[in-house]
Structure formats: C-alpha cells, structure tokens
Image 1 (cartoon, rainbow, N blue to C red):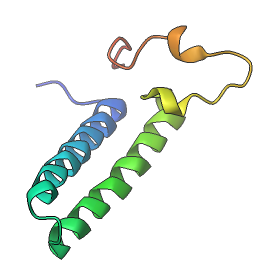
Image 2 (image 1 turned 180 degrees about the horizontal axis):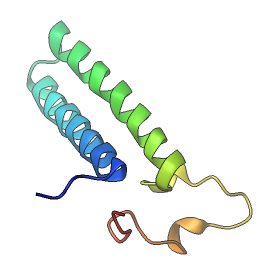
Image 3 (image 1 turned 90 degrees about the vertical axis):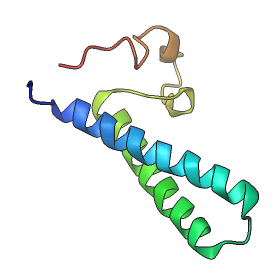
Image 4 (image 1 turned 135 degrees about the vertical axis):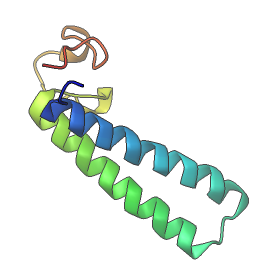
Length: 87
C-alpha cells in the first residue's frame, strides 16, 4: 500500500470535515434547536474553513472564492483541484 502524501492527507481531512458538516446540516434541517447538533456543525465548519485555507495556502485555491489575485482570474487558467497531481 502506497503512503499518502501530505497533500493527500490534508485533502482527506478536508473531505471528512466537509462530510461531517453536511451531515450536521441535514440533521439540523429536522432538529433546528438541538444544541449538540449546532455545536457539532460549528466545530466542523471552523475546522473545514481552517483546512480549506491551509490547502489553498500550500497547494492553490480549492474553491473560486479563494481567488486572491487582483490582476488575473487564475481560477480558470490553472488546473482545477481535481485535475492537479497528487505528488
């Protein structure tokens, strides 16, 4: 079994946290006053935001809203996250 790169590990953490956040959103749709659910959602949203920022800083933007250049819309001129190699 191949070892995961740091990039792959970070992406897996991001995907896991994003999944947990989405599950919490669905739960809160039917349990909008559940304090534990709200706290769980907040915890994973904060973690997801942190991991997205870390990934963007190290490997480039993962979503369009992380575009930072004022001179060029680089989102469409660089490989999309799913097209980038996982070296």
